[in-house]
Length: 452
Image (tube, rainbow, N blue to C red; front, side, top):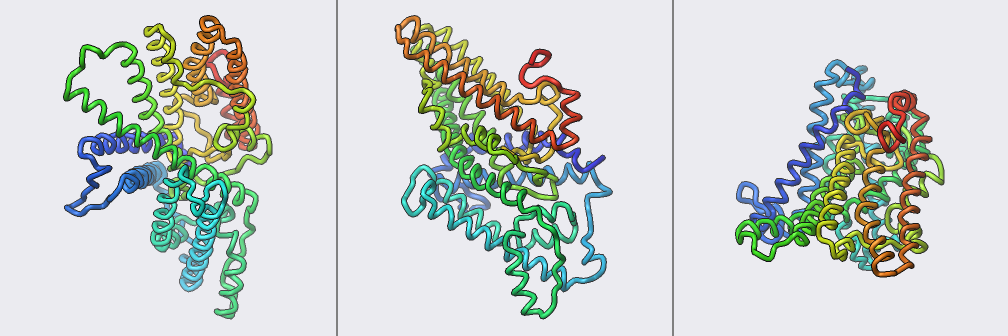
């Protein structure tokens, strides 16, 4: 089988990572890991809640990475190893000098990225911006891991996973020229192979990572903390037994709150892993990055801080305002319908494994929900919002006589239209890939099977 077949089995690593996540959340609740710490072989390895959350982020994605490597090896045994020409020709000095220069370039790039986050006004570590505090805990750990792990990873990958096409898209090209010139002066000869770097792909791909990784980090911290709290709540109910006062309204709220924390903890974990890990070993490198301003605009409009732009003109109520409707059975119905839709949304993410990323093509997903429609995530996410927000807006209009809520319907329509534009711009971008054109012939429907 071909190497890119791995993407058809990537959901296996997603299932594995999700299981580890949920198990860890349950154990965190049962054994109070946030406060008491996590012990391994009688050694305490986490000392705070932040440590505990960082641990599961890194553990889950690392195990998913290992699972995908195993699947890649099973699917592609004959071509799993590609020996570097320097190793074949026994040019070991050239090889290790190149590895050192690449390591130095990547380390310099990473260090400058750390400085950017610490001084940039939006993130503002030095200005004590609390919103991004979790990101700086993770960033410091990622830098430490990268500093040590890359010493082994870079030579191992260049020796046994050589790929000239992917070499053109490596981040080290951004700083390799000055480092190369210094090395040439020291060694008094040029031993580094000249490669025509794809700078556009490199820079745009780096911007994607730098924008979305902090967001996915703080989203995960928030959702995982809620998930652990919900396990605490469920364990408390189990131990105490359901009281007589536990009614449909409470049940509806529990289904919605617990469902959201579970669904988005898994969804954001998978997205975080996709943004952080790019590796030849699992064939999830960027093939291309969205080239248009419109494509970037509609994508970024769905995330902070840019999502405030459409909200200023067409504000919509909170999703939890549905619980203000006095009919408990209607609230229960729409809550379940919304959670089911969000579950479909999460399921769509699971088919990516470690290749989820906005604004990039990292391989065309054609299995699972994508066998029936091209945009199952966008369709289900918007349907969920309409299920949970529209009923409350209609309640405000017809029962509370609040006709200003009509503007909120326009807001819902505007959000849905933004996602529609996201779908169109993504299709235009992905259509540069012949595999996607072939996929569109087999799957002609965007949002609703057999309809639209």
